[in-house]
Structure formats: C-alpha cells, structure tokens
Image (cartoon, rainbow, N blue to C red; front, side, top):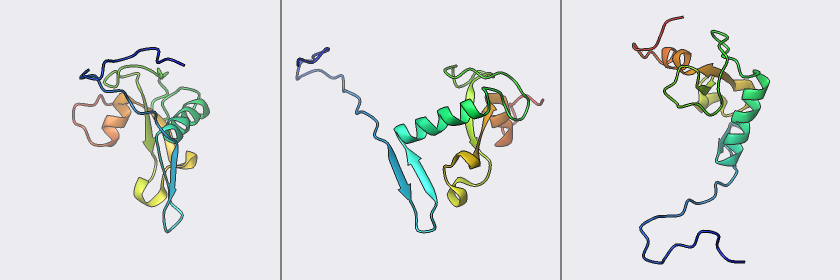
Amino acid sequence: MSDPCPLPPYSSIRRRKKKRAEVRVGKEGIVRLSGKAMEELRLQCFRRDRGHCQECGQRLMWDAWTGASQSYHMAHIRNKRMYGDTLENIRALCGDCHRAEHGNPRARVK
C-alpha cells in the first residue's frame, strides 16, 4: 500500500506520530493518562456534563478556539497529582470559568 501523501526524503515537514493510549498507575494507585486515553476521557466528560459549563451553565463548543469564552475546558476538581485523571475528578468548564478558577485577573466574572 502506498503512502497517500508521500514526502521527499529531504522535506522539512515532519510527520506527526500517532498518539498512543497510555495509562500509568503510580505507587498509590493514582491514574495518569496521556494520548488517546486522555482524549477519550475528555469526550466522556463532555458527554456526561452534556456540553454545559458546570459553573455558569453556558453551552460549550467541543472544537472552539481555546481562547473563546465558549470553548470546552476539562478541569480537575481536586489536585491532579493526588487524585489523578479519573472521570470523578474532572468537570467541564467554559474558558472564562476555567481561567477565573486559576486566578486569571482578565477572566470575566459571572
């Protein structure tokens, strides 16, 4: 099977590596995700919260520009280091609420 987009060997364009689902469990049973496993968790959170911000109730857009107020942010409820990447420890927030949660002074107060 030939490559659908062949690049010459001297091309400066690098091909992206496919994301692998990686699940790591630490000494204390804390789950840390990356790659496709993290993307799947983001999707599960978005579906569970029905695409609404859990602080202000605003409808969220899955693929909006990150700086937009309606963009979907997956936020940890408790410390990620202590409680890990689990569905119980995350929630959906809009960009403004997530920035305000982290103390950004430019975030819009609701």
